[in-house]
Image 1 (spheres, one colour):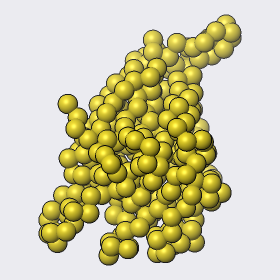
Image 2 (image 1 turned 135 degrees about the vertical axis):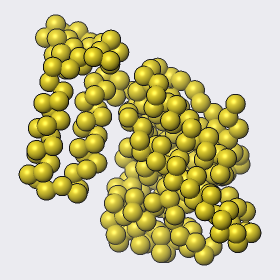
Image 3 (image 1 turned 90 degrees about the horizontal axis):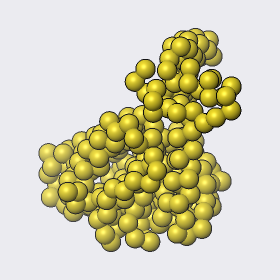
Image 4 (image 1 turned 60 degrees about the horizontal axis):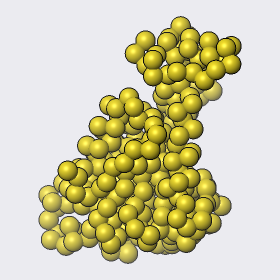
Length: 261
């Protein structure tokens, strides 16, 4: 049984709740649980999307427990950093869509966790930041890149170098998050958004997601070649045949019957 998170199902979505109150701190054991949970969900064909949120009303997650760095033991710190890397990679590797439902403070490793999700929904009153430099550290789970990729270098410097926390409304303005909702509604809206994926073909979602994520590193010609190759790989597959047949018959497609074709 998981100690640092809870897992529930709602339709074709799974809701992973970080649960290490009061601040939902991320420990090595908790990160290992998060990694193994996402890996299990990735192997579960009945789950098409994952929502990650925090227990309580105040914190999504305040990040790493700084007590883990108090001993000045580099080997112990490296174990924690590897646990972060494994957990965030498990989120990245999830074949469907991941949505972070930020229901309070998302700081340090907590924000880095949200940043690797496909979408971020934040409640009014939420605060987001990477304050590691205030304690003589830096973001070490990819935050210097994932934040810069999302909001640009200038804002990444303000947030990381200046220790600036941004509100949900400000985060929306700078492109850090996708939507602001009233308090208490982040999980509901996130699940609604995630469930929209259930109407799409799983193979199409996987192929398009890969192309979108790779696009910044490709020339237009390279991207077009990959797009064409991906499209041709889908033609004649069970989901493509079912999707067209359902459209022509004016009915909803049944993807689960075609996942193994």
